[in-house]
Length: 540
Image (cartoon, rainbow, N blue to C red; front, side, top):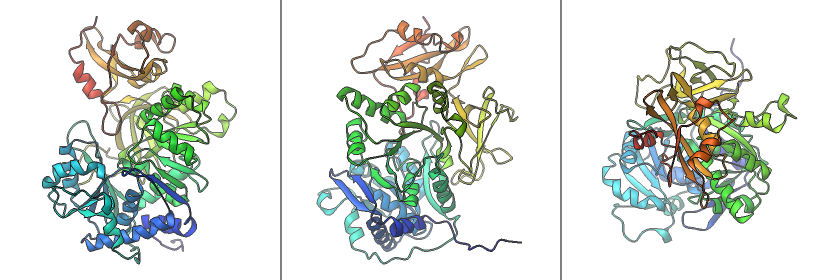
């Protein structure tokens, strides 16, 4: 016997309709590429999204067509999110920080029919426009006053003229909730980027789960500033979860440095924000240099790489709680968060820090397990570590345009490439990426733990641990270090900093000092480049 409840599809357009109806006067604030701060409401955003949906239809965009974006976090990008998917097309967010060849590949592979882009990226698009074989229309996301006088792109369209020339009378269509909604490519370190094609159903379910108190905790009482770019895994889903709950939304645009982020946090009364550790390092350094206090910021969600304990302590001094988030493009992205349980209330600071430095426990909908190299499940005892596998309704079943690959097990689990432990309470801690773990004398050393300890040193801004070939031990850890401006430290001082914090045989054998570390387009350390730089390193 089937239940007798209404059968309504879970659609992204319904999120915006709800926000328009019940949170219509709540603000969306954007720092624009052109310079000024832009303010409007969910009601106005919904109206303009309908206008844009009509404009897309006028450009010949049909159900299932892809519309690409190269854009920062701003109100126009937000409108594209909802207009494109709401109309039944696919919103394809492209990472502008990638190489030109990668951007061309991604747009062509996604078969984008329209490309919309911020003023910042006009030179990049001009460079590759002739190579974009499927793009029929190029739209510059600005107003008439800021359109370029000269450009090599034929018939370049103005976003504001396009939107304003169409009616806001538009009925969002209804269709199957498993219809593709959005597309995002992983920026892999080898081979071409791989596409992850999300559905309306997976996106709405992810918005529900990520809004839960033990996850990102989004509500109508929150003012949320997603610093994580909207071109990266749908801004960790925050444009959807904030719209679902009617949270005030603050979009920082292209200026994601400590000065500008501090200004927005203070002026807009931001209560929650999210981004990678590099961003918060810049914010904290700005506050430290200028003797500033952060007011009202209740929570910082940190993902992309692990937050060191020193960063958690510094944010706590401002009254801000840190929540680690672990996820992947393939998970929409939220998988686990490091929120304490009831039994942890009243625990001392060291115990809470142990929880906060873990990547956390799964939110409902995500299943996790660890297996050995032979695929045998391992115990969740906090000691055994193995390869992390996940599954759930917002985890990809296969990569875009790839019928067969080795990303999944025969019983349907996705191989993440992370090496982790899981304790009895379900808290997961990443010890390394499979390709980054240091193997010394037949034993594994966690590069992540070595890095997190060393960035606790007052002189260290950034640190990366890599395994370098050793004549006796196969590999030994080498630390690549960037010092804070004006700070000094010696090799022996930094190696001595590990004493009493880890097993002696884990202690790095040497330290090299660099001006900067190589990062991927999404802010992650490029260990492959470091290993290439030091492949011929001679141990002293």
